[in-house]
Amino acid sequence: MKKEAILINDQKMKVKCDSYALGFFDEIKLENKFQQCINDYQAQGYALLDTADSDA
Image (cartoon, rainbow, N blue to C red; front, side, top):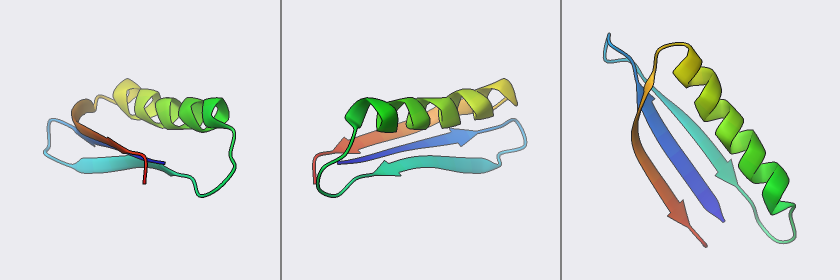
């Protein structure tokens, strides 16, 4: 599983939150950590630019 989100602020600075898992993992814990990364950047004024998911 792979998830990626790109966020941008008003100075056009981009940041990336990503989450990777190989084999057995706790999907809920992984999803919460990924979402927390996005929430933290949004609290700093970043806006979500793009997201990608894959089950690789």
